[in-house]
Length: 118
Image (cartoon, rainbow, N blue to C red):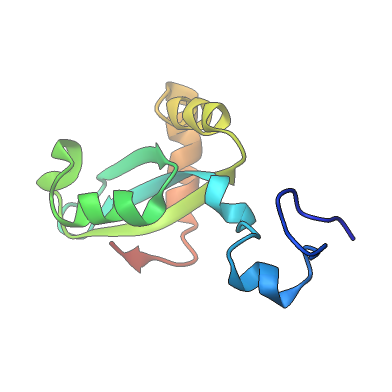
């Protein structure tokens, strides 16, 4: 059991008091996601992006604050991938926007298993 830096009274990471005080960080907080959105009003239109804060970014898409997606709302989130670093996520997003990446994106879109309204 590791003792958290800065914790008092020798509390450990498994201690309820530490969890309640917010000493433990959610490991997903520092994740970056690459996502694909589809338009519900326009066939064969999709958008690839990446973000470090999914909730905020999806809100921006929903409210029409993203110029690239504004005219294609309502949108659905059809795919997402998690990455530990922003650099990995950015590289994946850029790949999905290349010729070879578009082919992979096409396969992803053909095999949609779930979708979430943005």
